[in-house]
Length: 420
Image (cartoon, rainbow, N blue to C red; front, top):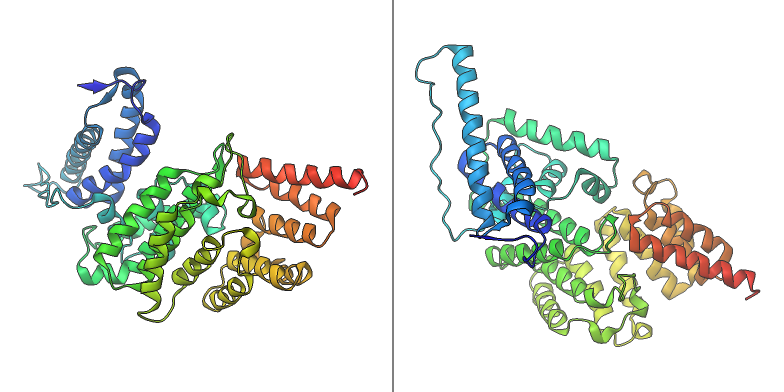
């Protein structure tokens, strides 16, 4: 039995993106060959993209994809076996053995794949990039945007990661409890980046991709269940909940961006805020504070303000100053400059931005121009602000963000021309 693509509530493209990591996890766990499994799942997805619009979405689309991917893997194994037989002429290699499928139905294949991708043969940066491809379903361009590097650089990094796994000889399999703890930092970073890409996409006609944000939250909840005493796991989950709580208020009827200060706070999800604050409060009582807890605390200060003018900016500034000591992330510096401007005036924020002028990670990123434009507007320098709003608009691939930035530039230009 099939459900037609027209009658399904979920477009088949979205369904494929949701199911692909799950199927990849199943195939990798069965065959322990990431590169070949990724190729097989990709071929299965292509077959689905051709057949599902024509024949309808199967009743169990994940099973359909898995079976097709298994057949592709079987073809690959036979081909490799024949090649080795020809090359070595060693008897007994006429048939490749298939490892037993040791996954229990209760296990979350996406979570398993998440930990498996953070492979000991890889550097943390390479493991994170590979996992974003396999688990997050992000394109190479989207991953490059998250890492603030050129797309070609990221493509080479992902290719080298696959090759390193193959050459290491270390099985691509479910890690032990001890190995999970060792890979936890990379896992959390991956979930953080997947959530961010869902909350504000790097490119495309929509401001956000709720499917990615939801999946990141779901996986973070599962990791928190596995590691209930890890305060940074709790901090990351709290950060996601406190940030995602504003989702409905971030866009208008036409998906136009609504900045934080102008949002209808009655649309914020109070249940998520309550849960996030409770998680954060419990984590802060347990151990030393980490970066995810600090970011969650900043989000909580915003969420607990009844009105934008009630925001406790001195507290946010203090939290960003702590965060800056733990991280050299230029985005932290940008947000610290905004907080400093809200407490000490626009000129102070602009002075802090000067530290980022030569940072190659932000050379082509729209956020630096967008923040400078905002602070210049605060300082009353409308023409300069409009210039930087336009520059920022030219650097973002997210259409609602671009439209918002261009509207700000047009508004300031109109006010200046009118003599205001």
